[in-house]
Length: 157
Image (cartoon, rainbow, N blue to C red; front, side, top):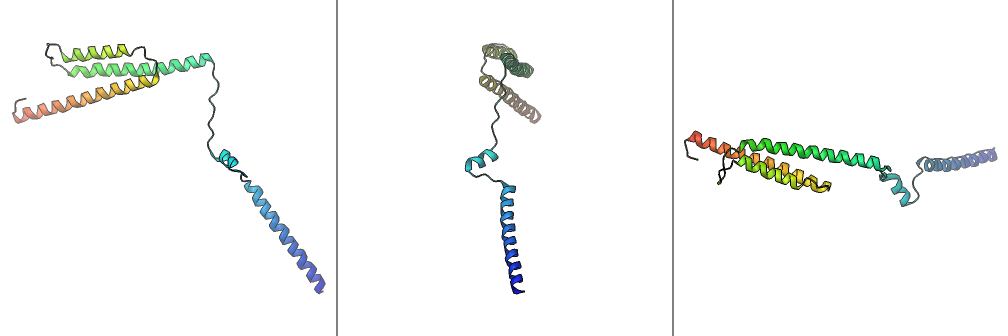
């Protein structure tokens, strides 16, 4: 009887060893982790997708859309400048309205940059122009507030 019990113990030990080995290999198979650093990086880093190849017609179309959007922005900026110059109703030392001087200078600058094709330069010009318009309007509003406050206090300008 002791020999049968010993056989069963040996058999159960073997089964335990086999099941542990299978469990470890199952865990390894379930994980299937990378074996090398390159595999790890390939699996977890975002891959840069190559842009699809486009033919000349599509490239020209995309370029036209980009130019159309910057053209639209430039026209919008020019209209904003024209609207902003309405508030400059006083004259300069030559007797010319500031509104006309500002409009003439804006026209000259837009004509000078008319044929600029570098998108970075065009963007820089558009941003600089819109910043200049907004800062000019802010300064104008501040000066008008000061003038109104002086008038309410009865001071001379």
